[in-house]
Length: 89
Image (cartoon, rainbow, N blue to C red; front, side, top):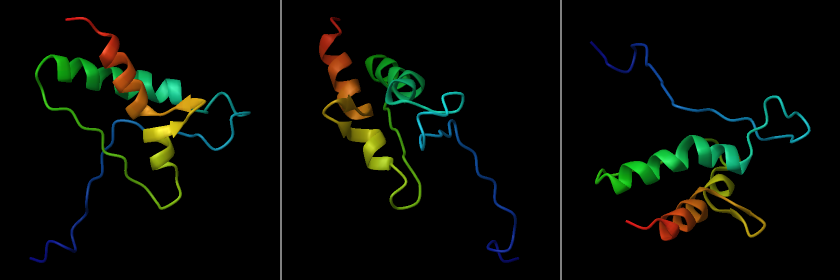
């Protein structure tokens, strides 16, 4: 059979809503994303495992902002780097 015709499964660990901060019940801040993803990445890396965050989505949906943020609201990469520098092993 043709593998292109079968059903495909799609799984993900997290999906966030960050369109309107006034909708606090479903809004995900940069801090929340870091708590959900960044801390685990740091933990795994310091335990000797490879770590990766894969951001996927439509153009203009906020992937770069989530990863880098802005100077006043850091994204995942700056937050991970900041915490990693502060950890004393």
